[in-house]
Length: 271
Image (cartoon, rainbow, N blue to C red):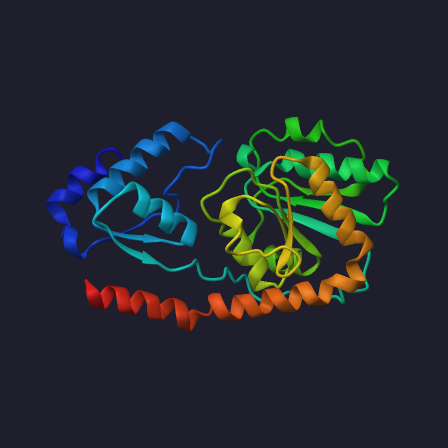
């Protein structure tokens, strides 16, 4: 971009092309946010056949652009293979809260760090916060950490061969995002049956039901996140198996390869 669309007009049959759009709306605080909004608008205005990956983005698309032929099919589960070991997480401590993925401003890792600090001040010691992902400005987050001994930091791109073990050895997957279109990282948690703790933004509601398939907290509120993490620690033995089972049922129903493939095939056959 911006030259791509000029070439596509001449070389690609518009009626038979499907443009897949991860972010119909650009997350607040995303890299090159203003340019991304302009480019996305150009693509969505030009192409007729659009694929999106969540109900929330589908609703955004049809409200902003008319006359589009839309396929809504979720992201398939991200599979990094089998972990070397699968510990009994119902009875293993410390409880590990995992953040995984590129560390960007809108994902609000600062809230997770602040929540952990508050738990330590309350006297909690049977937990760890595990942060794994690349970050170009980690120093500003490092300065927020008051008790380094409660953090396991892997501030780099995580090799594919390490991902399965990272998830298998964690108890909860934390997503304190203030904004997002939809997340690929959450499909990794689904693949490894890791209960999620997410902010209560609209985009997560189709994936996480509070106290059923995961836990939720008020967006942009570190006190609320600390309260939910405290709840998870205090009631871990009582709630963990149910959260895992309900999540597994949801994933089987909504993310099976067969159901996703059928949506693609039906859509392509209608073009």
